[in-house]
Structures are given as structure tokens and as C-alpha cells.
Length: 230
Image (cartoon, rainbow, N blue to C red):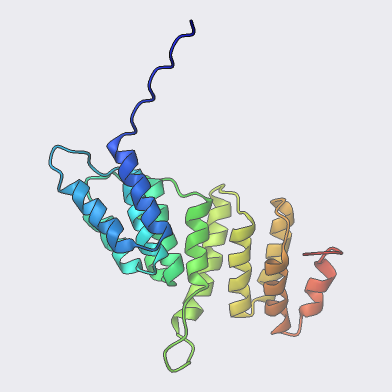
């Protein structure tokens, strides 16, 4: 007679809460996510939030465009120790909300807290720098001039610290070149991509052409693009 399989262990309450909050994030129900997180924190001797749960709640806020609420959570839930997953969720919220200053401050906080910055950390901050919106009257926000320079500086810092960029990182850096009309920097980035063995894609070449074209140097990109680039 075969032995009966032992019963599967019940998932921990923290995992259950985290799964439920992740479901809220997918459904853009950020207020429900906050209510679940609040129930955990008010539970006394019950399960308390951990990095998985807190990052899920921050993702729920960020995914719904509530970047201010995402950063408020990072400040408010002090019982969760600094964690890369939590900071990266907050950085993603800054990216979606086009908040480069807040993103750069988060990178500084990560370093100060001894939390390792990875490719996602840098990429989110760089992407945020490329999303500074126009003013309500259509004029260019003066922050844009600072933001694209910051994106390129972050890219150089990232490579200097040994974090290997990916295609998304290079797309953000190249978009920054396009915003600033930095055609020489754009060509250097194409060379860096080859050195890092990252294949340029259509987004990268489109941004590079934009950067070079604004200065009458679009042919420089054409000479560097391999046949059949997509």
C-alpha cells in the first residue's frame, strides 16, 4: 500500500497578504492594497509586513500613478529593514510618475543604507529622468535640461561601479541624448553597447538618430547601424 502524501504546509500569512496585495496591484486597486497593509500593521501579535509585502503595496500605488503614496509608504513603514526589493518598487513608482529628483534621492538613500544598487535601480532612475512632463501651458519644464544630464551621469556611474547595463538602460540613456541633442554622446553609447555585448534595438537607434539628426549628424548613426536592425 503506497504511503499517503504528507499534507502541503499552509502558506504563511505574510505570503497570503503579499499575494493578495499583488493582485490589487495588477487590478490597480491601490486603496485596497493600503487597507490590507494597514490591517497587517494593526494586527498586534499577528503577521507583520516584510519586504515582499511592502514592495507589493508600493507597486500597487506606483502602478496606479500614486507615486506620492508609494514614497509615503517607504517613509511610514519603518518596521521593515532597508531592502533592495522595496527601494526598487519605489524607484519604479518614480519612473512611472516622471519624478527624477525623487528617484535620485532614493539612489542616495540606498547607498547610505548599504543596499546594493542593481541594473533595475539605475534603469528606473534613468527612465524617470527621461519622463519629465511638459508644463500645463505646453512650455518645456526647465527640469528637463537637468534631467537628461542626470540620466547620462547615472549611466556612467553604473558602468563605473561594475553594474552591467541592459537594453532598457541603454534605451533610457539614448533617449536622454535625444532630449539634449548630444550626438557625440549618442555615438559613444553605441560603442559602449558593443563593448557590453548589448544588442541595439529599434528604440535605441531611433533615439540615436533623433540626437544626431537634431545636429545634422544622422548619417553618423546610419554608418554604425548593422544591416537589418530591428
